Structure formats: structure tokens, C-alpha cells
Image (cartoon, rainbow, N blue to C red; front, side, top):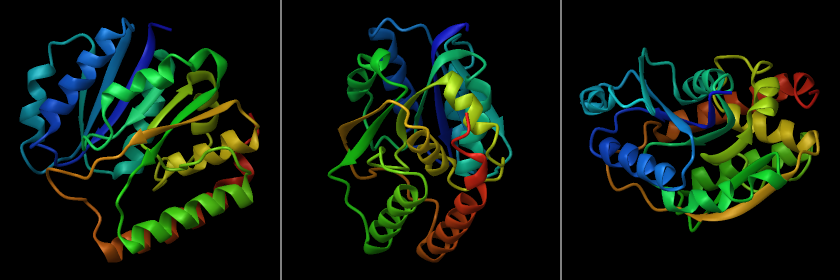
Amino acid sequence: MVFELALVMPVYNEEACIEHVVLSWYKELSGLNINFVMLVLNDGSRDGTESKLAQFAQNDHIKIINKKNSGHGPTILQGYHMGVNLAEWIFQTDSDDEMKPKHFKELWNRRKEYDALFGFRQGREQSYSRSFISFVSRQTVETIFGKGVMDVNTPYRLVRSELLKNITKQIPDDSFAPNVMISGALAKASARIYNHPVPHEGRRTGKASIVRWRLWKFSVLSFLQTLKCRPKLGDF
């Protein structure tokens, strides 16, 4: 592998904060003396995100991928497929600045003892709809695959590339919530899993890209996709 770590960050309409987010992660990883690459995937943003990201084009540790819009899940999968061929470890985080880089070292310093390390969202304020959907997602994974991951869809996860590669190649590219499936696969395989609390701060810029009615629609889709993909997961 060329790098120790590949960070996968999907981005959609985050012009107000993306410069700060990318810089803060770059500084954090550099400060930890990690040989890393950041894969920043701009998922067809309609605002000024692309122009904000252009300033990082000459940085060898930051790769900007501007792509047509395909959705959060497919964009994450694209980043995973790229990252597993570049680095020993893959870390996925979102670009909304709700979970800070300063907590990453708590996962990184423990990595040698585990296969996957998750930062579960602490203090997260959610609407009833999102809370219910999170509960259903967790119960689905625990019932079908087994326990192990406290926050099955957390966007703060560090996974060994060799495992992630074998899992993601079995997940359809159009999956809405691949992280839920990945959490399930790791639990079913009895991988060595570590869960660590990471403070979750409310969104300060922009807005969530999924409105309430679409949230329910996509949650049902995610549930059905997870059930359908079940026979293909955990066998690695």
C-alpha cells in the first residue's frame, strides 16, 4: 500500500464550511505523522463547493474528485473502492463538521488491536423521525447480523482495508446506506470491533439534503437493500 490511511469524505453543497473541514482534517492527520491521502468526493454540488475545493488541487495529500450526483451512499462506496487500493486503513467521515477531527486519534492509536473502530455519536439531537429510523437501523443489524457496532450508520469509522475491500465488492453500487451493511458484515463475522464516544455537534451551516418524507422513503429502501444483500455479507 502507498499510504497508511485513506480518508473518504463525500461532499454535497457544503460551500460554507468545506474549506474549514478539509483544512482541519489535513492539519489533524499531519500532526499525527500519518502517511495519508484524503479522497474528497464532490457529489455534483450545485453551490460553490467545487470552486472552494479547487484550492487543494496541488496538494499531494488531498485528491479532489468532482463527479455527477449519485447520492451519499454510492459516493461513499466509490471512495471506498478507491481507498482500499491505496491504503492499509480507511476512515470515513462526512463534510458537515458535526464530528471533529480532534477525536480521531482515539481510534487511530488503538487500531492495531482491532479490525474496525467506530466513533458513536454522543449528544446527537435528532427529530423523532430520525431517532426512530436510527433505532430501526440498529435493531435490523443486530437481528440479522448480530451485535457489535453501537452506531451502525456513524460517519466516523476506521476499518482495515483488507476487510473493507472484501465487503464492499459484494455491495451494489447504488446502495443508499452501505455503512449499515458494512457494520452488519463486521458484526456477523465477529470482527474485532471498538466503539468510542465522539461528541456530535449540530449542523451550523447549510442544511440536510434529505427532507422528512424522502427520509422515510429512503429508510425503507435501505432496509430492503440490507435484507437483499444479507446473503452476500459476512462471508469474507
